[in-house]
Amino acid sequence: MMNSTLFVKVLGIGLAIFALAATGTAAAAQAAASNDVASRLVYVERLLTESSAAKRVEASGKPEAVRMKAEAQAHFDEAKALADSGDNEAAEGELREAIRLMTAAARAANGDSKVSQKQTDDYGSRKESVAALAKAHDRIATEKGMKDMNTVLQQKVAADLAASDALLAAGNGDEARARLDATYESVKMSLEGLRGGDTLVRELNFETPQDEYYYELDRNDTHRMLVEVLLAEKMQASPMSKTADGFIATAGELRVQAEQAAGKKQFEEAIRLLEESTKEFIRAIRSAGVYIPG
Image 1 (cartoon, helix red, strand yellow):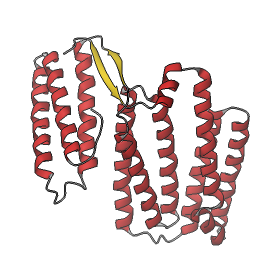
Image 2 (cartoon, one colour):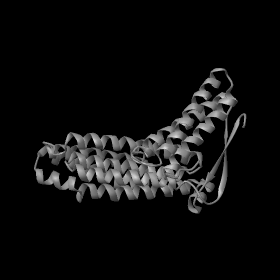
Image 3 (cartoon, helix red, strand yellow):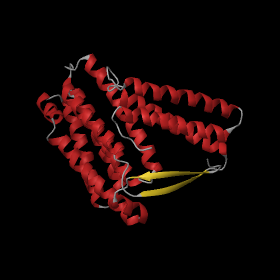
Image 4 (cartoon, one colour):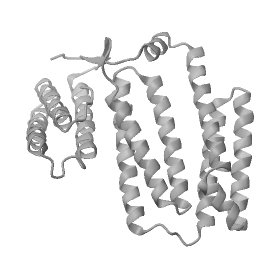
């Protein structure tokens, strides 16, 4: 147990990511941003010209839908010009606006939606799961010093969700869900990939044991959320459910004990109990066949 310092062991940083994190140069960061904007430009161009949403807007002939699509195209053109001038941040803003307008255009063109309420509800639940996974990925990758890789993934997730939303708005419920499921699997695989290879140590400094306690409390919440998201489907009628349930129950008991210790200002003991609780959550997830770093 450490009083004011927490060492997080990092497993699985690829050589390219490690080199980028190690140098931390402005040039490397700029290159990463430029590459990401370039990929986003390709995606948005396809959304505006080749997607089923774009075709639906054109076929509808509805003035409002056509107008918003034209506005989306104008924002896309501005994004290209900004990217060419090196202003990637402004380009990202224009791309976000282009996606927003295209989604609205698809919704206007669709009129009476052919998407059932159940499809909409299921889509919303799945989207919440994607958001939860992306949040967990952000936290774990940041702990492991993999900020640049995480930034690329988060931006890709944002683009994929926008594309899925546009498909749903256009009335393509099945296609929207399929794309959303692909995004879910992509984030899950990336989360599992934060392991293997060289081991690095990243030092996190806390001014007081109480600060470290709150850090571990939030970390425990993240892993509890991962249990809910990753195991929801796997636990149904699964022979592994009893094993996972045991780990989850133990994690919950340890969490209660940690909170009780913190209530008595015994923060070092509370930290130890939270760490053990988080380990139990990780064991539960791994027992269901999903490897996450821990």
